Image (cartoon, rainbow, N blue to C red; front, side, top):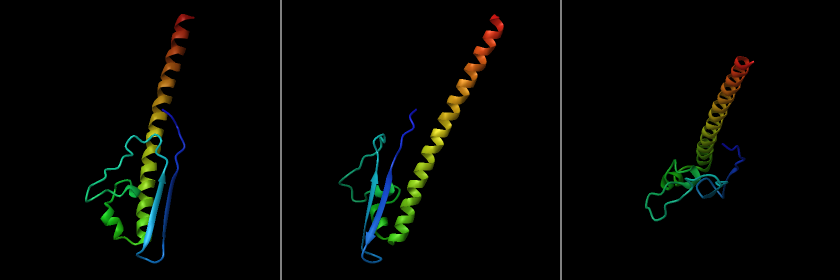
Length: 110
């Protein structure tokens, strides 16, 4: 298990309510699922990590799109932290078990 820093940046800019551009920069150094599938008519929106389709995202207002994108990435980050907490908890339990076992063996031998 490795604990690593990850950066996600979201930028949405435009001239009015319906003409805008959205950019997401994701540090996916350790993300094995970071692939895109070109050539499909209904493509998943990579900015929302595939949660929405591109056509659906284009019909949203910039504010709504930003909030939904932010919610997707916060959910993703929350799941990563849950996994880290689970792995740390499991590791701590193993260390406690081994420590308790070694102390019991020491008392038996002495």
